Length: 253
Image (cartoon, rainbow, N blue to C red; front, side, top):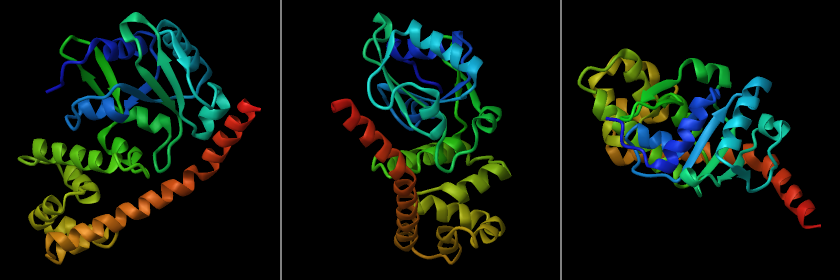
């Protein structure tokens, strides 16, 4: 069931929708809509870097009285290279809401592919929202930030418990590929041994589940997997963070 959305957040969502911006809700608000979070004050969007689409985005930002609040500045070049652009809304109906725009993410497909497989959800009041598909959202959240990994686990658990009665083959593969709960990963592997066996060569945690190892052992394998992803994310962000540091130094000089 899609939850009720507070007015400030709804104003941001409706402005993006009404201005026909090709942007996909991600981050905390997407997690709320997928049933894995209770609240978020930010609206994070993956956005298509296209001149006409950016014109539509500019109209939405102007409507929201959104001001860029940090480095880097709101420029196409920074968006294209993977920087996140931060805004704060001043419109009375969205006062204080933060919007974060990003166009390129580590391990995530191009926006064109994300857009084709997006989820389109209708809120209780009739507002329609384009949301990053769950598998893509999970990939986008594999960062170095501590808060993202518990959220990935909750996203996958919520999906598993809602679909496990009659899952599709694609959903089973998704769980085997991404589940972060040792008990649930073992449950899926035991229930679908042939699929689990095929995937055991590419994911050590699945191999541990196939071997019927205890959940503690599977958990250690999952933590090693997480550590590898965190390291990849730190390496990815290193040059981008250096750019931000240079911009801050330049702004203080």
